[in-house]
Image (tube, rainbow, N blue to C red; front, side, top):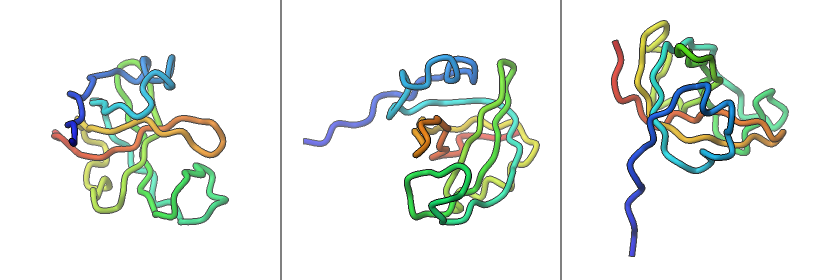
Length: 111
């Protein structure tokens, strides 16, 4: 039997940064301004060092409580949302260096 994912949790950047391990594997909704940083190569030695062989688009999301590094698959075309306020759904991932980052899985809205 397949169980649907629970409803995403609406969070602020500060909440994620204070206790990222509390959010591992949970769907989150985050609102803030997106600043596009560029594409990451598929190399093991790239600075974000995500455990994957996929290329990612990298950005930051800034809300009234702080800034968080985020990534998304190229299909989401996050560069289109540069300097726009966005509402995104994603999950917290742990990197190979025991850091946490927000992986965007869906753009819910932008303005």
